[in-house]
Image (cartoon, rainbow, N blue to C red; front, side, top):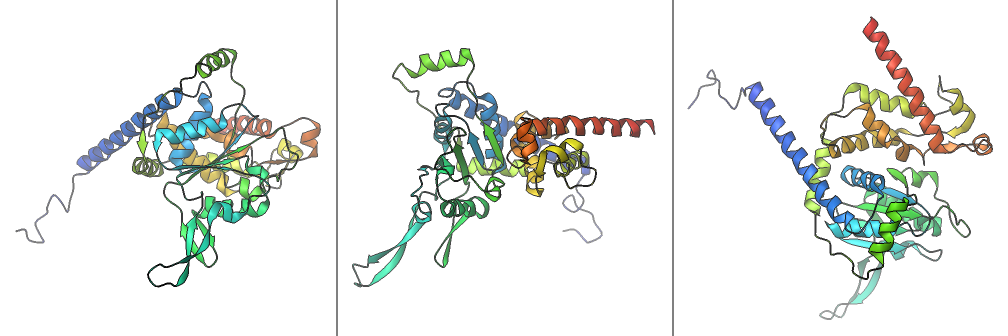
Length: 362
């Protein structure tokens, strides 16, 4: 038995041992994430050919707990990619085809009047809708009316749905992957800025290369579809999301992300001339949060526990492109949000280098 004057190992741990234990846990977490993404990629490549950048962004979003909006013309395997990821994970998966006649209760669920065979009394029982799943594919999300979009917005942001006077929690993890066709806008309901802001990424799905398209033709016309193995369970996905949240971020990376966001706002003091010329509204604080979380996940997927400004740059376009509202001048000069983000990244990087050089000179 020890007296209060006698130090114990538990009360005064060795800082060196604690640091080594922390490094060992970090190393195990990194190995676990590396192995998980390797297994996922292997399963995805059995079905999906090419689209490496799209897969990378979707995995960083998954491990960050964010949602994705996939934009691309029909036939680029957007739906197939989502269903493939769902099959490679031990998670529930539902698909909703959004149409103009879809009502909020069609996706959230509704109260149904039922008879109790024992008592003979009637009571309302909530029947869950397709929103109650781990991975939700919202196909052609811009084809449904604003009322239904608002129901999905609540689910994405709050992770629950409200029906009548009751609130029902959605399962964890909850991951929304929405698709949108950019070339056919007749009879659609453009997503409001508030809903777009809830998506961590807007991912542009482009055409495959010539070599990839040849492989697609050969693989998809043989009649046999490869069997997928489970790469991760829901508990493992949640554990990996916790690992991402705990990754430390250097102060200068926070400052860099903040500067990127603030420089997208044309009314901000010191805004760049091209921002004032081409942008009506810039990104809000949620964009900065997604930049940091995405940079953490991106660094981990590269096998690093150190987050750098290059990680922020790597995910800046999908985070910012749907949050910048360009004006008529941009349309006239054929300037797209991606062009604005590219100019912004170049300018902020130049200033960061100049600032670092001045500090070294001092």
